[in-house]
Image 1 (cartoon, rainbow over the protein chains, first blue to last red):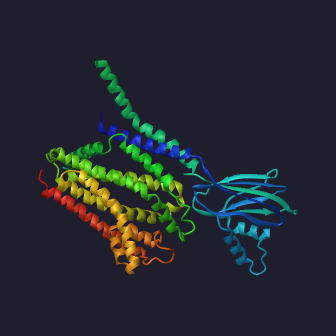
Image 2 (image 1 turned 180 degrees about the vertical axis):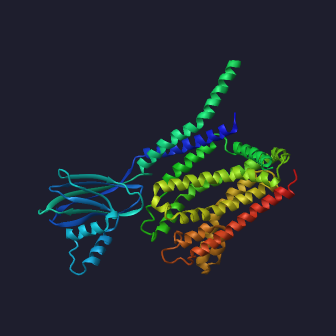
Image 3 (image 1 turned 180 degrees about the horizontal axis):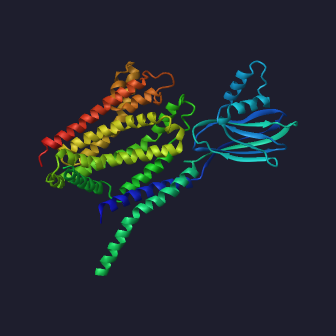
Length: 200
Length: 271
């Protein structure tokens, strides 16, 4: 059997092994790491932070919000200090930090820090956020409406071995590539086996 | 000319590869490296202490080292002590000497298989897995990630050099392999003793000498990640330039050991 065929097949089996490891990693379910709950009203024309932490790609945040009105929800990849600092810097002295106008202006000026945004649909908002890097995450909720809104917030943190979707996608590519690399060896091996059995 | 020299080299390299990585050894190690990288990396505990992206990159990379580095070391030690040792014992190396190839090229082919392939597999799987996991650590701080690997691999390579020399001189691999594993673990014992002594004597000389043999120690001191000292009481915080200096000195020792091995194999070894 030609050496390059053997070399290629060993490369292929190694790639398959890596793919299988990635597949296994993607199948490990995330472990709950705790949750936080908050109940209360959000006054009209104000915003508040409901969750803040430093998250890694191994973690995911599952957010559930129920409210009796329409709210805008933002997952920002900055700490709340950055938001307060920005407001303080631009509106020093007179700033009411909870004023939604200041918050909107912060969002307009810091568009890239918005990782995700949404609104409560039929009074609920359900979202799972997984960061792509190590980031400070702040979940902010703003009420643009004229009425106060009652909120029921639940944030659950999960830890997974690896970002499941990424690992799964990669394994879906690597395993067939590895299998394709082993094909020449496999076909040679089977042909040789057939010949041997034909001789017997 | 190059063709006539290249073919026997590849012949020996292929034979060494076949011997060092019998099916499914390579596959098992690739699987464990990939799985271990995801299972062992821990980005969380360092979040509160890390002051910069650089130290986070260092912390994430070094969290992978303990078990996986030991696995890599075992594979390399096995390849050199048993692979080369058996070839010498069984007289296979004498057969290689009949090839139209210099002795140093024969040893290079053996080391390329025993060490080069393992190292390439280890680094490529680990760095790419780390990239999948935390791209914003690997991409902007690739230098820090590579420096962490460079510093961490120095001591295992130093022992590999010693094992190579022992295998060549003793002409068998068993004792060299055992000595290598003992030396590998001796580092943590010596490191602990030196740390205690440095506190007792209020001298950093021991720490500096230690760093020459294991620059990863200096790197952990640089990022203030060495667990022994309470916060803000570390007696010695080397600069990054100093760490690079220690890494350079360490690799100089590694290079000297491999050079000695080459010289012995080329000139002194009579079979």
